[in-house]
Image (cartoon, rainbow, N blue to C red):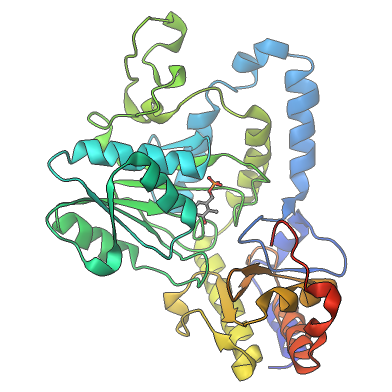
Length: 392
Ligand SMILES: *Cc1c(COP(=O)(O)O)cnc(C)c1O
């Protein structure tokens, strides 16, 4: 495939108009939308309104007049279709790590005769660190599903390799083994067609493919069949049946609201709402189809210049492509210096994420040519690329 073929594919792309909805710096191919999604054009105006109008003029009245109070639920309902679940089952707020804690703690209490949590050692570490903090016994998924397993916590898409679990198959297997299934969707929401409606819990962040902005709130899905029995261990005042009764003892709200914790991050919600205005118009089947095309094109163009760390079959990976390279850090620095932004994950992974709403085939072509040149001419050996920055 040559550059003109890529331009032709872009001209026929049903998602092509969405690129104009984003602020993309000139001369940059941004392949890090799986870490921090690009800025939607409408976000600045929406955040300015939240600051100047809602906060500045309405002051404390904003809790009622601007809908701040209900944001965790109203935003949850808007996000629900992106993960294949119904209204009234998703709450937005806090962070992914907090949602992991809430979901696994609740799941453990729902399955009190068992005490083991199965996780994936290759998962993004915070998920496993939080399990350690919960004090439960942790076992790796490679050790199988025995009859002492209470809960299984997995990421649909692995953050390093992009490898993807079959959510439906795994959920059924875990539940048949008498355990509860908790899915982390950080690297799949906004990149795949998702259906976690059968899972017990699911959670994820909104600042990756969803473009909610740095520090955007996380989401938590609780299957409605658990709404009555599941307990929120972070039983803050927002989750109370009547928060404004200020009762001395905690009494949980009905429904998904019992999984809120406390005051929403109103300004961050404003940014997320702006990005959901975009997502509301997106067909996720088109997103997935384009994602498969983009990642496959990149794999083909890089060819055997690098060892692939991601699955070769597109149906087994998310929207990212990773390669191994012993000197991955300076290679990535050299690439970024030439306008191609990916990232490096220790010890030896070069990671490239493809956000289908704003990445074009021609971007993939240009990124691959730059990568091949950096490798071919060993441009990464320049000393200035050796020193590590705080965030890789
Ligand atoms: C990005 C990511 C997180 C982020 O957690 P925060 O609490 O938002 O810092 C957690 N888990 C996985 C699998 C991730 O990919």
